[in-house]
Length: 558
Image (cartoon, rainbow, N blue to C red; front, side):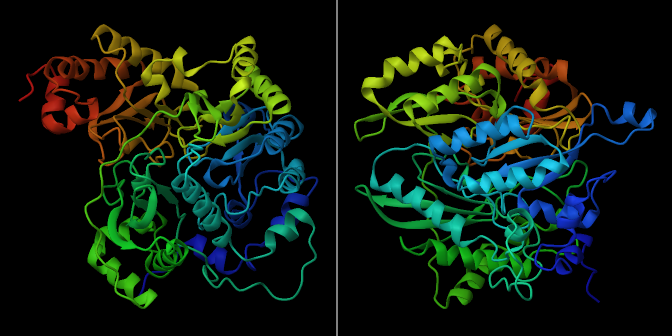
């Protein structure tokens, strides 16, 4: 007898193609408390999560008051690309409906926080009016499709961007529920068929990235599905298809784990959409719908193997798919600072700490967009590129930003330039510990430890999350700091800067104030014993988990 589907599967099946009772619940003017479980689950597909302020929840409860309920709203931005006009529209919405900030995500999207229930519908409608959407920014569907943010003016980068936009459009759900609920479109007839997703959509979220080996800033192997460009002389010759990546796990549940994708096969240059649909169908038909913690495509690949996946995709597409060659060596270029695009124009990469656009940075960017109309591009590192700047405007752009006190890449240490942090508390309901709000002090502590060991100028990636779900990809970099409990973190090391190796657990339940102290003995060992050009994660991987832990305990590394 097969296991019973999870509660989320029943909600999706009975949802009338993602409609449920959303419209009635968000329109209830005198509503008290949070949404129903059904509405909460279905709203994710429309790009929003209901949240509450966890800082004030206990105090409000003691006073007999309800939680301070608000919504996070996420905007899809394929390949991270926006226009100056769209940026200005989002900036205005931050004040009109949200908490006065914008947040750049590790999937090249934009989020708003602090939207009250009465403002949810008008905020999503306003986003639509600016030729953007929140549909499928969350939920059990293909989410925002990412690729390199670099706006290089060549055929390969143009193709990466174009494929990201095509996949984003073609893999959207077909239901009109979003338009009816948030845009007042008139309902017509029975619920729409979903030829790709089916009536219960996917078992879990599905992430896609496209990359060139010379630019793995999207962390392509951390995605359910990846396309790695194969080129000869500047011409695209095909793609290596990678399947089965994903960062989420649960503490103390070894059946859950982060995983990097496997190279499955090679396809032609024009076969991306066809292959993407086949892999989505694979997830739809074989993903676990009984246990959401075991529902990601990575578990299917891990348990059934690469050959099984290739055979299934071959059968789906009606042709034999050739096995993939060994993945090429990946590089991760620095996109911050000034760069030539190759068409006579420039881009400027601005660091955005933890992706939070607020205060003087937000004011400066508003003036930038209005005066120079650059093309804003969100990176997978939560930073912002300002593209298509005329060379003659470089001095004026720099002066404007400096006048507002904006931080430039050269003002930061390499560690700060390559750090990521999730939102975590006080809004994220999954958080076990702080994320964004302790990003700066953790960075300062680790920077000081590196400096004491003569390593201040070394390029190291540090990724901080408030829970093990892995939104900031903490298991695929040099250092991962993952929330364990209030004030406590699990430390991971041994991944590589290029995103091709997972890290291992170094220490568990480390107090925030002790994170740098735990890492410093390893920094010292790295400084004394590294091989030429060896990165920190590479060093940790070379000596191994046991030796790395021995260094922490004061014993000599083997």
